Length: 299
Image (spheres, one colour):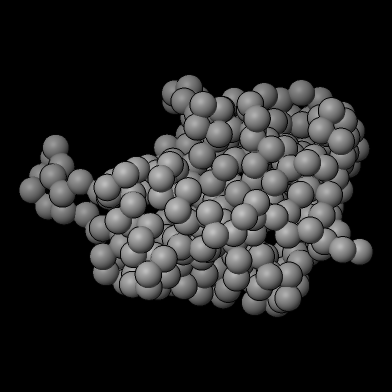
């Protein structure tokens, strides 16, 4: 990644970064894990976004995923491992998520910062979504300025069934209160085509046409001067702030922490399944009562 003025300090491990014709493309590159988010990957994404925002040869940014998916969510194997009590440089301990409310809030706020750098930077960011865009993937996508999806993409937050709540909460600003509740009450998914119908995405395209469509849009945006693009982005985002978006992010982190400490039967079952049988069995038992887990929009 880079320092503040763009000097590359080390090569990113989980991202690809490319600039062509005033468009920076940042690609999640963990396809063997369906681009699930771990702490180093989130840090690299943040630094890559700041690098693109700082570079004068970049006017627009595309965020996408390598392999079959945009991003399948947070890496639950890592999340349920917890944080170590011992360090190599001292005999002190760090906060542990999932045990005390304030510690969990602290952890969620640190996670949330990575997604929220997207609306904070000056340049437009397009999420190009294919395959799975689930849980933490939606935290990233819905923080972007524009969301363009494949018709058959899968969009949702299944973790609300037993794990928590979106720690970066832009759902209501995209699809309104009823659809936000409909999706988060059940953890159901919807197709990319249906995501456009309810406002979670701007456009959907056949999967084989998605790259060309996003490339054309990104280059069209990048043809406008940086200063003008920043003016348009910032006034719209200031309007979102006036509608309470920043306050809602603070509350979202706290509600996620509250959900993590819940002791209901589904939450308790998921944690015990993770401890005794691992992620695959825990997800199977969590999702089995919901069938295929899809909501289909009738319009």
